[in-house]
Image (cartoon, rainbow, N blue to C red; front, side):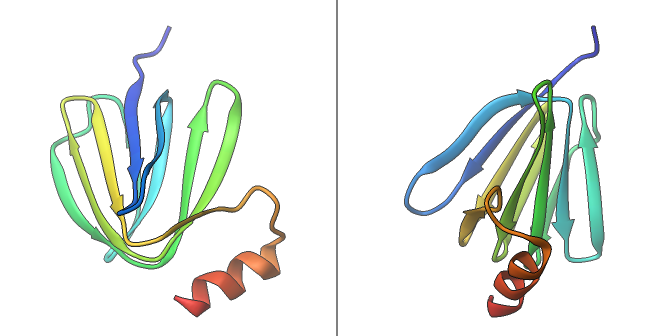
Length: 101
């Protein structure tokens, strides 16, 4: 079994998600970053975009307004200004929400 990465998605209001994942893709200011277990330590600023969470039960998307991500010791913490679950949105709605940030 592959090693997992622990992911925490946090907003000023609440802890939105705390789980073990195979991979998370975050929208860094210099481009999207795929983060898996044993990733090098990184602290990065996030731009408005989508976060893809790849877990054992499939992929989930969240829309983020911006914020920061810290990766270290098989743990990724995303501190988001705003975070919206994109599960019930289509592609056009997701693009419009990102543009509104």
